[in-house]
Image 1 (cartoon, rainbow, N blue to C red):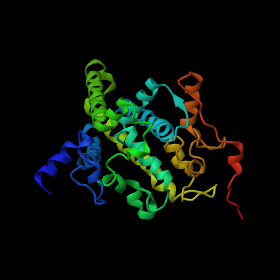
Image 2 (image 1 turned 180 degrees about the vertical axis):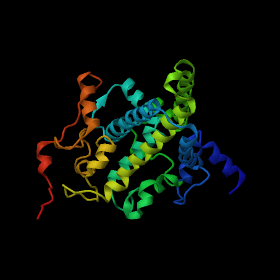
Image 3 (image 1 turned 90 degrees about the vertical axis):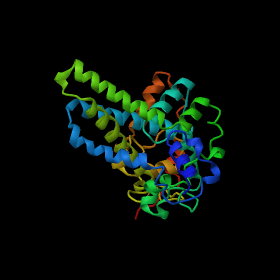
Length: 309
């Protein structure tokens, strides 16, 4: 690897446009480019250095939940599937929150997810377990092959310059978020010492731990939700419904439902299937922040059911 290539990969940490589509070929792990991802995991070990306090645990939980909602409701159901409508300001706000999840920008995310649905569990599916469980969980995005955005899949999103900026400088927002948490922690150290919060605790728990758990719970929908669970509908893929994943991902675990009818804003098709993201979207609809939530047509609920013996 030449010095110029190494330098280009380092620059791509901060500006993803440095990697061209022509380089989007290798399925080997791109170790130099994914160093930040590795370091984020190692940073979680700092919990043994900074300690903990009740406040930072609540912050970590809230940080997880608000960003999981941004990923499930907006990155997935809105940007990828157009399951509802919203205004440009609300669209940007939740794209921004989603970007703090360190799962790259909304256009990149949607482009690969749309491709996944187009080729689910075939050789052209970029993260199917048929290529191996670890590949479906994270190998697919650690390689160079899937680093660039498949622009032909997201022409509708490319018209928004603010979304293109989030995609190009996808590390900027997570860095700002981490430093903001650090700053809040430092302020609490000075002005509310009785809370026993430190800046280190706030950034380690509120950003690193919360983000790594968030990333892997999201990735479990690509991996575990295609191998573990039950199938209600006969689909052309291995998607499964999994109640535990649905709880952890605010509703995304009803994956067989989703593959049966992807454009629905609701993935828990029945009242007993917990879908927190959908309930929050309904609340936002009541406030006029989103509208036209796509329902599941009644006839689709009983179409292609798998017969139980």
